[in-house]
Length: 331
Ligand SMILES: [Zn+2]
Image (cartoon, rainbow, N blue to C red):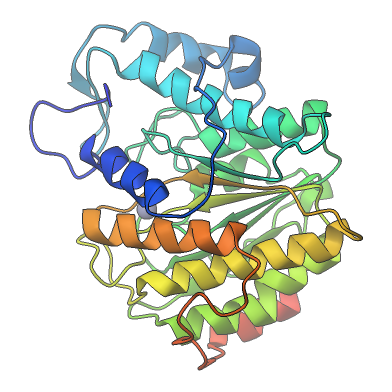
């Protein structure tokens, strides 16, 4: 809440209030875990020390780092809390005690998936989901899958794991669009070749298009890769109401996507175990759509009921990108 711009900016503290009220609308008893500051070592797994230092020097200042990305007097401290909060969620998901949670939701600002190793951009300072994925790899997990359904391509996350087969980055995004990356044939390189999955979608994408991409690409990737942890870069800016993008999703679509992923993770985990799934908030700039989409996504993560999400997403439309991406990934 303390990361705020003096002039109006769509990435604003009120987003977090909408996200919190989404959680309270879902009938689940939550274990609340306070965010904590990410350490230099944790940030240093995906960011350069020089970059972390350069942001640290901005503590207490108020300025724009580029036309989109601002810092206010308490932004650096807040961004450290956001990254550390995502790390803390991962630690809780891997806690050893009986009954440790297998689903987590990290309500964090600023968002992270555009932040590069050496550059803040696209409203993002530290790359929260990447810091969390790298932490999971260091302490808990052999394989981590990041599914990014934010309407923008997570160029920072892709870049950080471009050559790394132990973290798969899979994104659905409006294309061409900000930030310009995320082409179909961008599949990683070196040992990580085939471990980046991009499904670039034309503007105007509906639930049916997303469903087609999930059924043909995203869920099969999950089943093939069998990750120990799934992190969702969960933006809600592919909503039809969002002022910054041009997709056509309604709130139940987010529930359907979350449920598909959570179910697939349960199947991979096997037996009575539930899969480990952590949702990390990214974008989403219409407060009504953010609240409704997040509430639906959380219900999709935690509910075992088959029918509590309206089934308005029965139509499946397999777009060209999904057909092509289906042939390109090799894990
Ligand atoms: Zn976005």
